[in-house]
Length: 240
Image 1 (cartoon, rainbow, N blue to C red):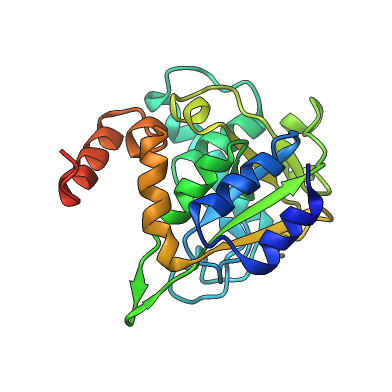
Image 2 (tube, rainbow, N blue to C red):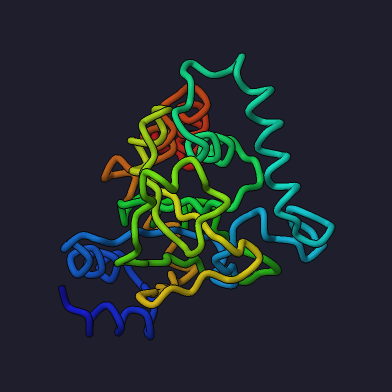
């Protein structure tokens, strides 16, 4: 692994597919998790902690862990008819809730850098005539959630990684992992932390190259919804 190259790409940004390929090679030693965001102004904060009251915030009131716990209990009570299995731990319940859009103290990550690149570039666009830069976050050397932690997710005292069971086809397809955060209102800035900005002008090109590598809406969301969105994208750009 070339740490100097990794840091150089953090300073200069990802300006081309070649830059992304270089980053893939440099991060190939393992131990990394990645997260793609469509705006480089976004910060790493779980949805349950986004309480600023503005547009897009998850909560209009101050954060309250009791409400987090009550929301999870309500989910457990009402979600059972829709599940094909019985979750084996509290953190698995939390992961399922997160996976289906509930505000939790988990953040979604992937062990696949190309997957993160897809999520970074797929919704990138132009605002007020200007390209918006996307971003890939990279983190390594975090501690894994222990067996004891799994039934006490609200007692975990520091950020850790949770590797979920393959409870839905999307999880293995996206190589999904989660981080869990004891203080969800705080920005996540671990010791080994990198932020690689993708030039807005490059996002469309990278997304097309990713499709050639079979990283697309259909492969990452292996269901009828994902297939329909993917074929709609191909139709939009005349790729039939």
